Length: 267
Length: 225
Image 1 (cartoon, rainbow over the protein chains, first blue to last red):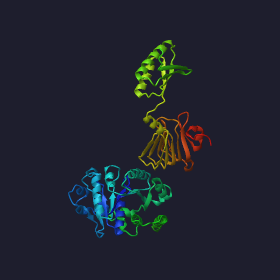
Image 2 (spheres, one colour):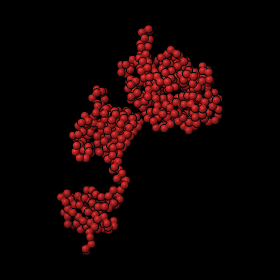
Image 3 (cartoon, chains in turn yellow, green):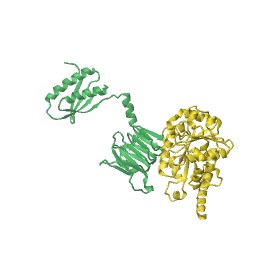
Image 4 (cartoon, rainbow over the protein chains, first blue to last red):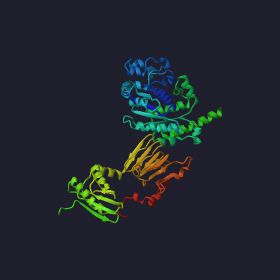
């Protein structure tokens, strides 16, 4: 029986889809059977980030409406041997094409076949959000150090706390710009974690390679040397229950800082 | 007529107190009250007199109470000051109890959430920006207040707000609103503070300790120590 984790943020543009793709990829790299589910019906992106757009035949709405079997709609990622699949969102319908009950049945069905189901939630707190959380038992809240993103994350955590079937969400702070944070131009990691009162699952530095990888349709987590990739791989390890101690997180944190510094020096 | 009177009138220096018997029927009481008022209003001069009505152990529904008040008001120089009674309905008792109770909650009040209590609120946790706490009475926050707090929500201007760390977006007491200053303040001076309304109905923020002087009746400890 698999675990369904919803990746959500409230605000758009903080990196939910990138985080979903990379956590999914990193879990598959650890040998887990993973299914990525894109619930952003009408504005699908996850297939593009994964580079699987041209393989889509059926989508999530087709499965829910019984127009095809689940196996027909799942898109297999060729880079992995039968470990990573994507259930794409429909592009021609909207969020109301599916309701939370149907979604829960779909996710429960996927739990039979996969170790992890990573649900990419759309921005907002409306129907799309309700669909995305209905089948999940765990949640990861993604935020950036910006005040707007933190405010929306706070709102979404409040809503997640009202869902009895979801455990206490965990936090990923994305797109950290160490220099700004050091100058106190953005909230720092402690501020955000304390403000939102969540367990910190991981931090990801802002990195140009991530954008390049996204545009090429190859998740950054495939690259063993990139700092953001290592961050996503660490997140996956923590999801698997490996205890990466807090000190190590701090070290990793300073590691990120020095690496970036060195990077600029070399240039 | 030797019958026991159902309505007795007593003059005090503040006006008249009307004692209404609680054993007779309501219809009888109304009739007698009317008689009595007509009788006495003849003898009175044209000055406004305030009337205190005491209904003893009789329970008056709100419409009956209104009828009695109306009856008295019709006599041109009488004003009903208040209606007192020894009895309460369970509902009213429950409401009174709630309004005098401290409700304690451990929670982080997050953006978009509203917590409302009829009496005092003791919040063990923070109020995040965009979150709101409301209370009919006082608000005591053990954590950091970063959102909106509204004390004395039903019109109690004596209500106070206190917080371990006071950084609200807005404070409201009764019908008065004060907001955080636009310029950033230094971070350390906002600890253990309270807000109350002064005589000019302006919200004042001060050290927690001043409450001892400005709102001594928050204490409800019986006896000395």
